[in-house]
Length: 361
Length: 135
Image (cartoon, rainbow over all chains, first blue to last red; front, side):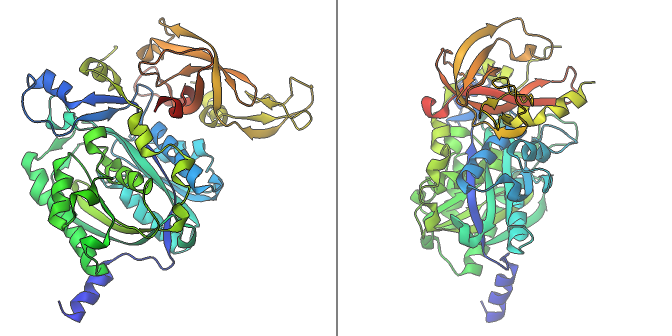
C-alpha cells in the first residue's frame, strides 16, 4: 500500500471533530424463551440441525416501544444525566409498532426527554441501531448536542416453518452518546460499507420477510462484515490482537463465529458478545446487545470492535476503547446476563399465541 | 374517540408521574392537585420510583373489551414505596404465582390495542416481579 492509499483509507473513516463515546448503555431481553427444538418438533418432526438453542419471545403486552423504553431507562440509570438534556431520541428497528407514527416520540415522552429533542425512527434492516449511533456520534462530535440517545430494538418476524422462525428473537439496546471525557467507552472511529444487495426484505403490508436463502451468506453477511472489519484494521493500523473483544451481527450461531475467524479473531474474543445461541437474532438489537454484555464485564483500556450488518445491505464497524469511567456503571441497572437469566420456557402453542398468530376475530 | 383522554393521561400512565404535597410531603398518585392528607394545594410533579409490593390481587378471566387477548391476567393493588396504593395489571409472571408482599417494579407496556387494527395503541404502567428477585 502506498502512502496515498493509506491516506485514502484513513479518509474513509468517520472520526468526530471532538471526542465522543458511550456515557450510558442499557439492554433489554423479554422473559420468554422458545427452544429451537420446539420449532423443529412442529415443522421437521424433530429432525435436522438447530441454528441456536433458544430465542427470546416478547410477552403479549410488549413491542418495540415498550422494550425501547426499558433499555433507555437502563441507559439513563448508568449515564446519570437528566433526560431533558438529551437532544435526540432515535429508535432503529424493522418492527416499529406503527407504520406511520414515530416510536421515538413514545419513548421520549416516557423517559422525560420531551419536548426539546430530535425524535425519529430509523430503518436499515438489522443495522438501523448502529446507523442511529453513527448519527448520534456526529450530533455530539460536532457539539450540536451534548447527549443523544440511539436505540436498536426488534421483535423480529419469521414465517411459521421458515428457517427464520428458529432464530427471529426479541431484544436490543440503548446507548447515550456524549462527550469523550464523560464516556465509559470512547468511540474512536466508525466505518461503513454499503452496497445494494437484495438478500432479505419485507414489502409494504407483508407480515413476514422474504430472504434469498444461501444468498444471505457470502455476498451479503460475510462480504459486508469482513470488508468493514478489514477496512477498519487498515485505516486504524490495528490487528485482531489489539482487541480484547469483537462482536458482530449474529443471525445464528455459525455466521458470527465464521466472520470472526475470517477477520482473524480467536473464539475467546467473540465469546462474551455472542448471545444469539441463548436469545436468538434480535435484528437491530443483535450486535449492540452483544456490546452491552461486553461493557458489563470490560476493563479500562480494553479495545472492542463491533461490526453490525443490515440486509439490503451494509455494515457499520466501530472501534471503542473502554475508559476508567466504566467502574461501577454495570451495577447501576439490570445487566444483560441478568436479563438472559430471567427465563421462562414456552412451547410452540404459547409462542403462537404470544406472537399474535392466533386470530380472535 | 378517546384520543384526548389518553393524551391527557400520558405522563402519569407512561412514567408514573404524580404529585408531592409541599405542605405535608405526602406523595400523590394519581395527581389530583389537592392533598387528601392535609387538604392543601399540591401541584408539584413527582416522579415515583416504580418500586412497590403486591398488597392484594385477583385473576381476571372475563376481560372487558380490548383486554380479551391478554386474558387471563392478574390485576393487583400495588403499595408503592412512596405510599400510594394503585391498581394495575401484573405482567411477566411467567410460571410465578402472584403473592401478597411480592416485590414488584413498574414497567411501561401496551395496555390494550384499540378495538380494531386501525386504531391507536394505548401504553401505560403495569408491574412485574422485580428482576433482581427473579434472576
